[in-house]
Image (cartoon, rainbow, N blue to C red; front, side, top):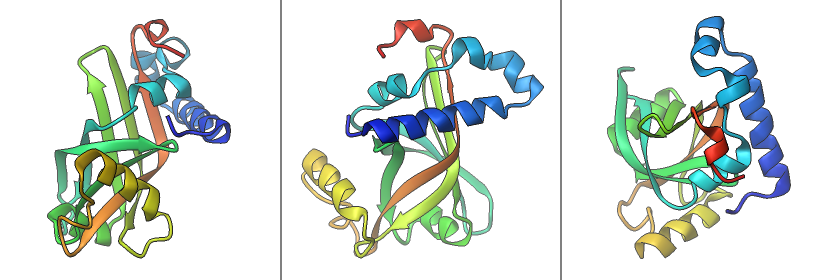
Length: 169
């Protein structure tokens, strides 16, 4: 866990805002007052590398979903790719993406927002690059001349579990 108290509070506020803004149909399904996971539970569930489903546009706008190695650091999702990958070329044109992480019906975490492309010269790339280097023994920048990390700056963040009390807080 790398989240500060302020980052946890910011994530909790985002979760609360997102769930409060759900429509009647979604609210009837997820019952946010009963089945939402809180920020501390989310951070614990997302500790370490997780295989997440990333949805991003192709250059022509078609939706693409694929599994990616994802990291949740400071309350935000990250993944890496090559700058010439189809999804990155699509994100250059339309920088919106979604990430989902779930385990059957046990829980769901779903985030939507702006995808920030972080190339070598990005001022905030050092920490995530070090995490990748520590885990994989190499960097996203070693795999491709145009390696890139992507940070999802979520503006919607949904959580769900039929048994939220079964998760550590």
